[in-house]
Length: 268
Image 1 (cartoon, rainbow, N blue to C red):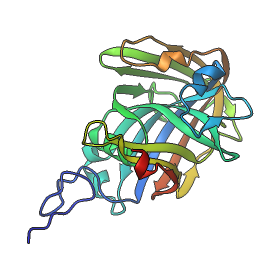
Image 2: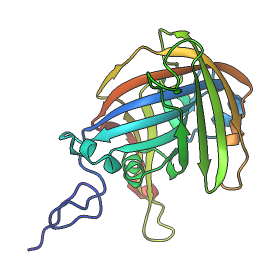
Image 3: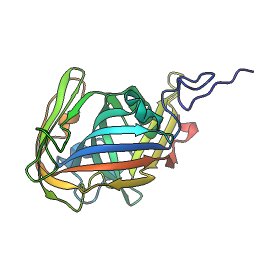
Image 4: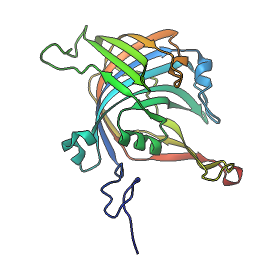
């Protein structure tokens, strides 16, 4: 009998080629978060049933740039940085399910294949993109984390720029923002291999950090521009009113989620 191993394809005799290892997954990252208000109807159109808009501030959006280092439990990827380092930009809104408020990632771009694979498992709608952000450093011309420090951030996909921002820090903050501050409510969906047979996988799931630690958040102001693209819709979440911008270093562990509801097989 031939047996194959690996948490995720490709599964092989040894499992070494598997694109991602089994959780828990550990993350260290620098986050730039820009919160603003858009037309609540544009948020509502991105929430499939049974999700509903948040009762308070339903048009609030967080656009987040993250520069990550990540690894599995053993940490070996940190010594082979091509397997641990990646960047992403993601748009988060809030919603409700059975009276509870959740965060939900509605758009996300990453620059590594293993990050896309993890997103498929977690219910994130990940796509390939080109993401860059200014890194702080205590020496030379790079900004320090201090009042007046300025950080740039850009996002492009399919050769077209989708967003650009400049964040200017003002002072330490008691929070890193509120839009991305809840457990995530995501859908995991996979069409049947048979045409016309609906979904082979249809789950609404809850997930979040198994553990979290973070440095001192800083709050400031942001100049944010969104651009139209023939293949992306981020610009539909147009900026109507700035809220605030934040910088923070964080450490997160992700170790699975919880099924909220599943589509009925007979309805597929």
